Length: 113
Image (cartoon, rainbow, N blue to C red; front, side, top):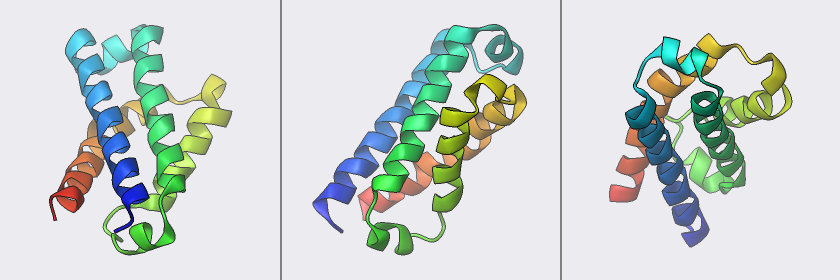
């Protein structure tokens, strides 16, 4: 694996950790998320950055780990960046609480190899 990819994977894990930090501060609750623009911005900016980092990975890194839906993570970045004013909060929350932990687990496993 290229050293650049290792750095990117570590940055993605850091953004996952930042989302967990926001959840620890605000609570892991959709209603709190929906009511707090600060909570939304903190989490959604991390997801946006994760999507941007996924785009920066080498093709070899993405092809070597087809268990991760890279295209979807890149696409979610575009939605969060360009459609933020029209973002469906429930979909954003589902990404944060369902998809992000799986991504974190997969990347942790990649780095452990």
